[in-house]
Image (cartoon, rainbow, N blue to C red; front, side, top):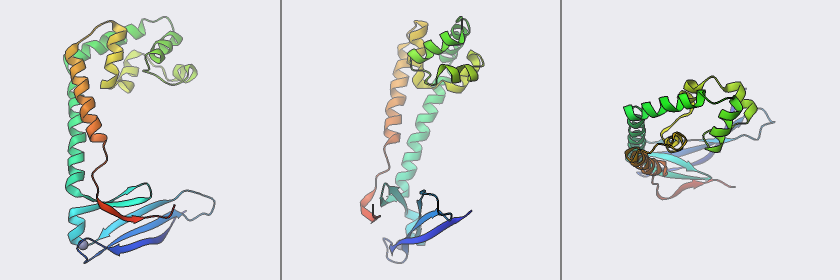
Length: 191
Ligand SMILES: [Zn+2]
């Protein structure tokens, strides 16, 4: 099975020497409603500076510098989060939490606690199948934003950890904003 591609839009680029190409794509078998767009800037000068970015049914021009800025924001957030999760203080908290989980009387009790604190969202049946001890669960599931609930369960508070979490959350909000687009859409598909 392959892909059918149809030219959807072709228009001049910013500098006027090349063009933007947008193709409508769908699987070449008839029974799928799936479709997507492939888009490119066929101009050496413009492709060095810009990229096309699809937002719903609109295609915008975005500066590559802006995309690099977004990437850096994301990396900064991931680095901060990794730094926090590997501090001795957090490692000790997670060790305590593993001991706490493994000491609970049943898988149902563990599932109840984790669900109540919104650390787990699967059904008890799925949870039973997946459960392989506290260590594995923590390794697979725990991220910086779970630390508040974990500290609450253990009855401990570390304000400096909470400050770090807030800082990472702020960074993550900024990183999650879509890159700034330039001007009006280059092209808008029919709905
Ligand atoms: Zn150009």
